[in-house]
Length: 304
Image (cartoon, rainbow, N blue to C red; front, side):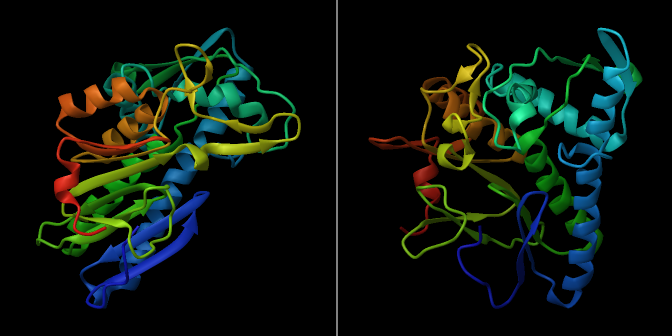
């Protein structure tokens, strides 16, 4: 989130898509038009990828898959296709440790007080020649925060071109700033994964860069019979991840990659550190006993 209000810029935080949205722009005289356009873009994401609304594209595909055989092939919209490509890249970047299929492990009891976790044998294959997906019967595509990270960058980039100003868009813990005019947006990165700035938090500046934070505590949900359960799963074991960071913040060029690497860090810390370094990204990784910096992240910190 922005470290503090900037007097020379328009800034706004509001709720949407089941999370909070941050908008900052360097052209205050067109701020209302920029906000309206951002709301239109967020609606496009919701229509394509929301697991919560019955008329979203992913929910309709799920319902249609129930009527077919073991596997079904469906053409998808341009928006959903682009989101699926970003999710496929997340799988590749994280060596399979971030996988959109993991949402299916949790889904049937995700938004209610369920009494048990339900494992679903789901699979999603992309068919580029047809701009289509092949999914197993009963599979609900759950793009999660990877899709939101991709969309934050897409929104910021398109708004910056359309309105000719520097733009920052954040969807939850995933933020991208498009700054062709050289603006540097100060962004706070709390050690505990909070979404509200407090004095003393580390601050970095974003200028045509992305930053993403994943925190284990924000991915816990209360269940009547389970107490606390996490939806950070290790695809290798289909069990909750136990060898990752408590809070992982990753900074770099591509928002969806930052998101993927931060999620990977919460699943398997050592593998994530290697991937972050190899890809040339930067990270701050907080465990129960120490704080580690990777790729020069500490050099980007303005204050503590």
